[in-house]
Image (cartoon, rainbow, N blue to C red; front, top):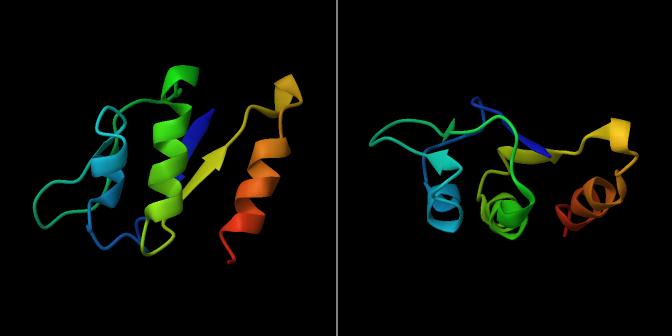
Length: 82
């Protein structure tokens, strides 16, 4: 699993770094920095929360399609419109 950030949307609220501090850093008066390329499975819940609670919807999870695991990605897209 990977996570991507749209830096044009990010406003530096830092909700992501509160939810997943091992994965995200938001410098003072800056935009999000993703601290790792591949997110380990044990951090999935934290990253899902970060994506869910991002006030500008600047984050998204990208699943490894080579594994055929895209179900979570679809459900995230559906939930983000609520």
